[in-house]
Each structure stands twice: as structure tokens, then as C-alpha cells.
Image (cartoon, rainbow, N blue to C red):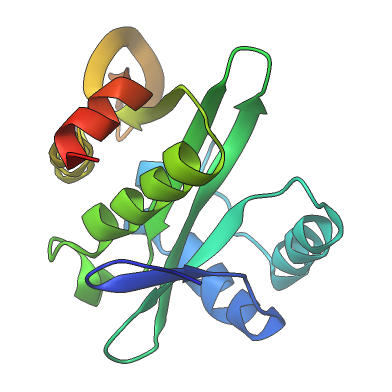
Length: 180
């Protein structure tokens, strides 16, 4: 559907749900995504999520698929959309660890930003990331996101309180960076 250099963003399929559930139950993946107490995510919950996004015309959730192999490796999308203020809050995960640190997440975010700024006419995209997720922070910075704030000791994980960063990119910054 929407293509980058390494990935394409496409609609989720029912057959993605089992692998998505496995990705989301991986302890290392989960520690970067959910602030709550890590608890197993069931296939039934994943299928309910799929039904919900399938029935919602205002949903912008994408499966991330590799271009070379056509392999489903994660997901991204808009978690919240504020049309009045023209702000989209996004999220992303790469669940297949074989693709971590190789630019797939960075490329997926680049494609998502292109969709949001060039097709939806949104003025600002923001996200939240845990301070210990250094790989993600670097990836977001490569796409032009700037740290806008720090939510101090926002989340308890691995025996200590951790900060959460608020990061954002404005439409003007996106177009300046991408020379469009």
C-alpha cells in the first residue's frame, strides 16, 4: 500500500494475528511497548483488536511488511487523532528481533510520516518513548523528531522508575527535511 526503501505499510490481515500475538508476548518487545504489568496477551484479545480496527473507518493501523521477503514484522499507526488541533499521536513496533537495529523501523516511521503529512494534512506528529529505549529514540531522531519534554519517573520497569520522552515533529520540519 505505502512503500519505503525496506518496508511497505499495508492493512492488517486475519492471518497476521497469531504472529502479532507472539510478537507482543515477547518479554523484550513488550518491555518497550506497554507501561502496565507484563501479562500474557491472548489470541482472543488480538482477534478482538483486529475486529475493532476492521470495523472502524477512521482507524489508521498498518502492518509492517518487508519488501524483499513479504514478511510481516510489526505494526505502526495513529493511536490518537486530534483533528481540531491537527495532531496525530503515533506508535510503532518491530516484533521480529531479526529486523531490530537494521533500519526497518526507521523506514516504517518515514513511510508513516509521509502518509500523515502528505495525505492527511496533519500539522504535528508526536509519540511517547521510554528513556531506556535508546534504539527507538535514535530512530525517531533520524526521522526528524525532537524531544519536547520528559515525563520524569513515569514508568516502573525492571526494578526502577524510568522517564518517558515526548517527541514531536512539525509539518514544516518534515517538509524541510524531505525537501518537498
